[in-house]
Length: 116
Length: 110
View 1 (cartoon, chains in turn orange, brown):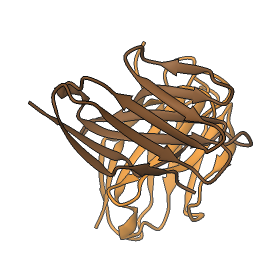
View 2 (tube, helix red, strand yellow):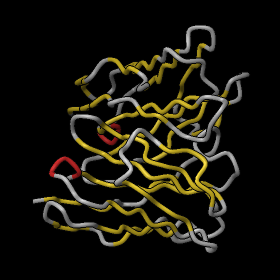
View 3 (tube, chains in turn blue, green):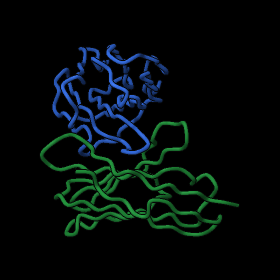
View 4 (cartoon, chains in turn brown, green):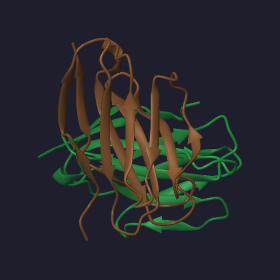
């Protein structure tokens, strides 16, 4: 089976712009979680989707949003980019119905976002 | 609230053992362990569930003290390939999200 894929892998934007990142989960996986990884804060949870429903959201401002499509592919959007949004954005998919609670999460390679 | 990992970093020689700890102030439903090598995605190592069930790699050993909300990952007879950053993730019973600690950088030298 193909692993989790994320596109694009690298992105450079300027402050004030918006960006959309895409994640394709492993075939058959219906849960997708998104994380922001920075050197100072580690992996921080953004949101989790299951069957097109957002079940949990992390402590991020409303500029961060996401959605999941019927084929389980997910996108996250960041509007009005700030310098502090520069990070590696990882998505992870899992096969069961419990998301991060009890299911193994399979991570994609991430999208490296740089905001200038 | 992020779980707290200790130590923040550890350096070993091949063949030595290490223990990485993870503690939370919240009542946990499960504890997950992942390893991330530089420039790569985190890779699953183990899940420890409330009640004692464990899922993970045979060569990995870990414990979960439900009363203290603490977990420990035991790395024995370390190999060079064990080098990387180890993250613990914790989940509560009321939601589906995984909250990760800041990581423990493990370096194994020849």
